[in-house]
Length: 371
Ligand code: NAD
Ligand code: TYD
Image 1 (cartoon, rainbow, N blue to C red):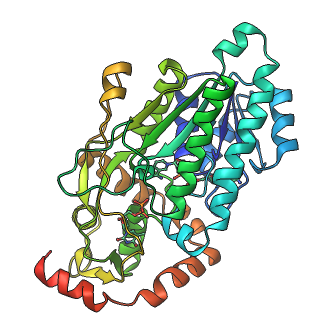
Image 2: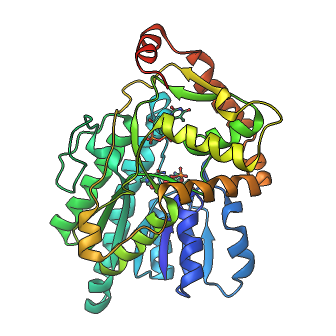
Image 3: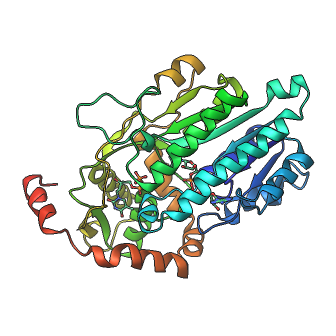
């Protein structure tokens, strides 16, 4: 069997659903069910798989005794580590949880995996993998003409989130070099798709648009991200698990650089076509708000190593992926209603209440760059 940590979150649940649709190898999902974890994401598979091929354990990855016991009981051939605190804005308001889960949690998993790996016979030990799922944000921010991030770009994390992920990447690397633990690391660009928690730009925009709420754009809206449909990230992870060379890092990206304004306008146009408003356009709800502190200007990924060495190719382009995503949110309104609960509303209040409209400096920039 394989272990998946954070399998009740956005990418982890997509990974488990895709894995179960394609293979029969059992999966154990290890997730603490924080605000970002949602067992409902896996309801279909939990109901369909009564043969033990899908199991769930509500365990904190920092809990050494519980994680060690899971290794001893289930004897996995691999662990895929998705569990993390993942939202940059939350890391700005409360960095401690990011240090705890992303750094201490990864350290604990490495310790438990290492002890287990040392107990395996030679063939099992050679086949074992620890796959660490990380982000392109560890590389910092690019200028408009800089080359995209490659696997050899020096680390320069700028937010507590990216700094905590960078620390975890370094620990993973060290366990290979020092102890020989067969690790793999993937650094991926921004994901979007079904089951993404509506604190992130794309689901926040879709769900706010449908509720007639403002669509908040930080600063001048010209920050650039590379966007990848979540299913393509999952196929890359499965391929790296199967064919990646232990100790190696693989960058994963969509070759889809867009400004935040382009993303939001694409979403609005898609909604205008699929669910027109009685009057006006969704883009009328766009509202400029105060910028995120330390906001990275541009991310871009060079995924040549993954495409040439392992033969990975994304199935979706930006337009098809966005269309699928908008349709999923339109078709899954009960899921949206459940996750936008009391604690979600509390977060939105805390995050956006004192942002107001654009501050003066931003307004000057906006006037120079009409949308
Ligand atoms: P998410 O926030 O949607 O889900 C995180 C999951 O981890 C949740 O189910 C949560 O309950 C669980 N979790 C958190 N703390 C835990 C703990 N201490 N013990 C056990 N479980 C815990 O995150 P996501 O967007 O699915 O991201 C998954 C991974 O992919 C993260 O490591 C993230 O850094 C990385 N990543 C994300 C993106 C993106 O665009 N979302 C891009 C590149 C890499
Ligand atoms: P986000 O989805 O939080 O991902 P990340 O910060 O990890 O890239 O944000 C994507 C981009 O959208 C980022 O440049 C910040 C911007 N953004 C807004 O303009 N408004 C918002 O309300 C949010 C949540 C993000």
